[in-house]
Length: 323
Ligand SMILES: *Cc1c(COP(=O)(O)O)cnc(C)c1O
Image (cartoon, rainbow, N blue to C red; front, side, top):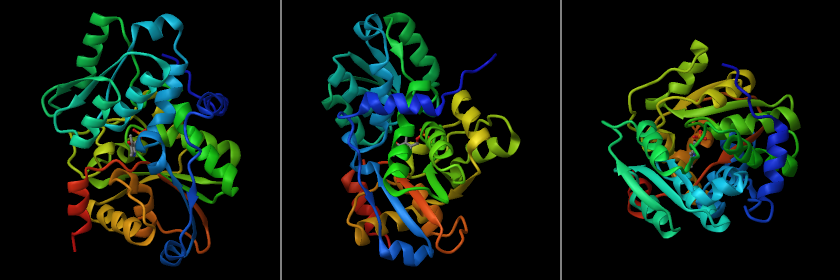
């Protein structure tokens, strides 16, 4: 089977499609982060994106590219949270009906927000049921178009716009650190980095408990893992996509992992020092540098995508009060 991988051109098109709809999020710096890392760090704040995560970029781009008939029939998707909100909000903005298939144990804040955006939510048990099967079955019954969370050309292209903006705003980078779940953000970011900052080393960062991406890169093929347990609920995917892996194995330097305690420390750093709320998954890229999972040369220019800020406030309070 020959796969058509997304290209940087697709990212440029996505950029035009989301213009004026998605926020061009700010890039923050911190002297404390620079002192701790010995590097120059640039944080792309997708925690401040509409609906609270970069996923709005890919979701909106994917729905906007449907044919008029497809738009009339509506969109179905599965997600542990942020992609669901992205599709729900994009559907509302583009007047397209949406059904979201979500795990029963998804964070309450994410479930509620998805329903508030006007989507219909259907739940499943992620330890016993396969979401792909459920989604495909419902898609056949309803004639709606399935937009998966990461393995989709327009989704990947949309996600790549965040890194594009980051490099346009701060200039070329030596390193780009990207949170990794199914790889939409990492693949899209790598396309932008290779085009705009060709010498930039692009790293994916996963929770240690769910290192399927790292195993896949080492093995040269997509490796499937058992459902992992980590506070990084946006990165609990079991395997990379065919498209995302195709780009990742070509353009990504390596994949490193961080632990849950390292994510908590990083979340506290953002709250205390930079006054921003970043969800556990959103801390992956920063944790790799600030907690020393990846050694980098002094004064390196390091871009970090803070991928999202959607965290249940009670859980967040619990994280912040950990010693
Ligand atoms: C979805 C998500 C990720 C992972 O993105 P992929 O494209 O699946 O790799 C990282 N951070 C947050 C906040 C997310 O919502």
